[in-house]
Length: 123
Image (cartoon, rainbow, N blue to C red):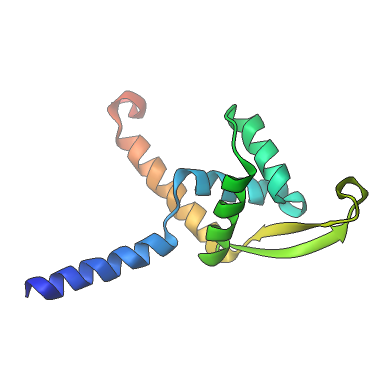
């Protein structure tokens, strides 16, 4: 019985890993939704730094975008070549319905927890 329990826990954990959002993933996903048709890696990094006051490497943004795409929370496509990039194209990201659901679940969890925190709930 103990082995079956461990297997179920491991299976549940692997499912949760695929759909849960880390803090940075959540912020990047929100920024993709905010920036709509201008959501590309460099713009996301700039917006993150402006909104949070924290620096971020472009590599961290790229790896996070790839993880979110693998989870099904984002889609991507190549945009048109631009002069500012020397004629190269940007990879543009869009949030999916699954990404919106993940953000909604994350928001609901946080709101529920904040409402239970005595210092902020008015209790």
